[in-house]
Image: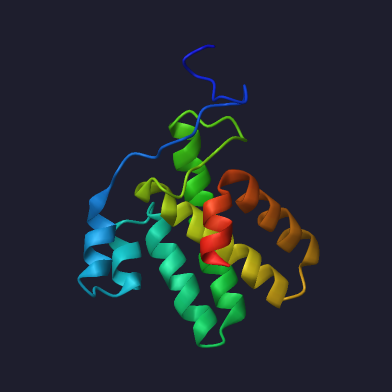
Length: 137
């Protein structure tokens, strides 16, 4: 078996590089908008903004934040060797921002009636990380 294959013969898990700055600022209580402004590539900051907007009933705002976090995460995944499919383990903490943004995008898409996008994002989340799908739902 090649080093870059998992046990099922598929692509290896993608592990995003750790960027503790946004995570530490959010944990310290810094406003997610400040963290996103300081670290605009942080999916975690955008996912937090999406969650907060959704909780206050700002669904379209949540959708926009989630979409930004999702696309920032796709960029990071590609830079890390991801080829458009394969595991993105929730167990690897730096992956959680992307996975949270993907979940938030699915949730907001469903809330605004974008059923096709909701289904696509839900399947993408399950395929990327069954743990994330179970944990975030």
